[in-house]
Image: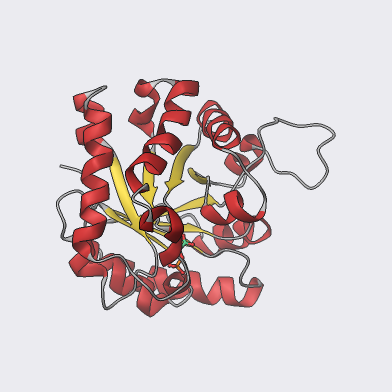
Length: 251
Ligand code: PEP
């Protein structure tokens, strides 16, 4: 049985005050979420603020939104896996579509980040998903398979044992357009079948999250699908009430 995971990707939002208040809101409602795992991914500089606000609580995990492939040294502006672990992170998002599209990260870059994240003691949340153009030309499965295969080529299938995949159709991120539960399930099922062909145990255990305009109103219908094990939430993770409602839907 896969434990549901609800992850909040705060993106480049927030400050000290909003971080303290959002963490307080989430911790206040956390007790009702008895089963699902809860993860928040603030901007780098707010991770220590969030850790302070959590005040030693370990029922809400911390993660980052990206990392560098190097450990330390002359890489101005970058943050390494060991720094994230030092700041209290357990998870790190790799290959978010905004990183791929805006910052030009290739499948190979994402695979390298996946590898260094694990080597540094972090669990990667690997984001995959097709653009609208790719969906409309019937390439969804090919794109998702290519993005996952790039990681498997670098780390091997066994490393998927300690990872999370987030299927995030690019056209649904931040747009208010959500994949229907059936559309999302079809891709989640495809991902699990692809992995099952390589290792049935890992495929069965791996959590595959849906992301893309998930909110309090649509979370339950999405997460109730067989192969959807939670959500990666952008906009709706910035308010404790909507984020907790999604956590409850995953519970
Ligand atoms: C995301 O950026 O990972 C995301 C799913 O954003 P939103 O929920 O705002 O669509």
